[in-house]
Image 1 (cartoon, rainbow, N blue to C red):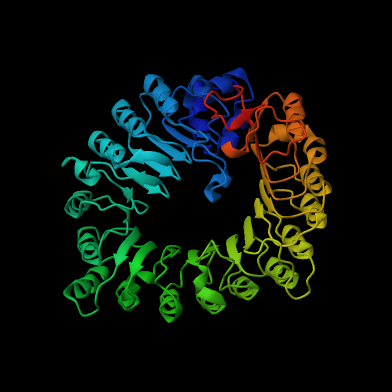
Image 2: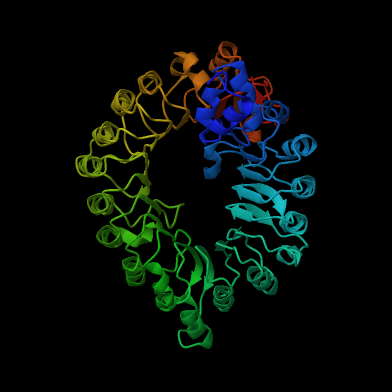
Length: 571
């Protein structure tokens, strides 16, 4: 194959969508490197500080679709200051100057200004897809620029962003010639939208398949939208409040009957539960149901809704469903593959679900392979049963709201239960631990979790051995988060070579000192070591024995970043 013409190699490489596979083939020869470099159109950057925009462009000059991640995962839990960094503007400037063929961009946990969105909208004539996840720094004026200038826009997906209200009614900025939208998601926006402009936009986009509305879109507008777009596959409902005898509700019931393609249902930001039967006709075909914001759907109304959804493969729900509600899920949704149960009140250690509900799910849903479960208590026996019933877990994240809670029956650590999970689930790639745990659980992880790529630990372990077990045993580990645990400099410095193959290491509220971090930075010059202390905790001339509040270590090709704020020390 080395002697094939470059055009043939490029065609063959096009059948390798995986970034890892393409990375591997680029190492075969100089010819393959050149062909892969010039033919890779989709690029994923897991850390925006791992390299500069200029290096990316030099490596892949014909990039058309870019995924760019910013702040570490712990930023989702307010563990990273909003002023920490990850500004997208320098990336947009570099791409605008060198990559005019860019068509798609997805940003996660980045700071996105209105100027960034305006430049983006004016620089790429064929731009058609913008996805923003967990971003901040922009207003609806930036969205207005995207709507006005991106004439070929197909996807505008805004997920969990902090968007401020500007002076523009951004939905009315879509020109009359805009008929290309396939996906529009503004569910996370808090402000009022132009309902008339929304209805007109939906009406003139015949290929619209995904539409997620925010809480300001009322039920009567939902009914009009369903008349205009019965072809929707993904529907996010805004406000679902109306009297069951009203004319709007009757019209909604009739409109829903024509929506035979809906497979994903979400939203219900506000809801009058007696209106739920109107939506039942689409439930028979649902494969995904997200009720993580539907605080008004509880008890019998929730159970009745679940019983209509026998084809569900993905369910996101609040813990108010209770163990009895999870038993309904287990008896109804035999094809369930992903379950996320979120806390109704994340600021108080109160939950309506226990280990009983999860055991019922494991018995009734043997195809389950991805789990996020916030609960009040857990036992080793339950975890052992779950591991036996669902050995195909790839993601297992258990969050006990009292982080130091032992097995509430035997009062023993939960080591054996999590040990059963890692021993039975051979394909496990992501694991989050909680509850009372000793170093023994880390020994199990190091012995059995051979495919583990990401591990999140909090309030666990007795000393340094636990971290060493994980680093020595989990050869595929790429991301490690440790919070409020007794690991110190000895564990941090024991085998620093391991960090060179990881994307990042995050440590907060542990026993690591400034001196230990300095020693680490000297040993691994290809890694950035950042110390993050809040402004009121900074010392002018800190001693090396000072414990660091937060340490973030990550791979880089271009050295320390240039935009670190004063409360971040780059070692």
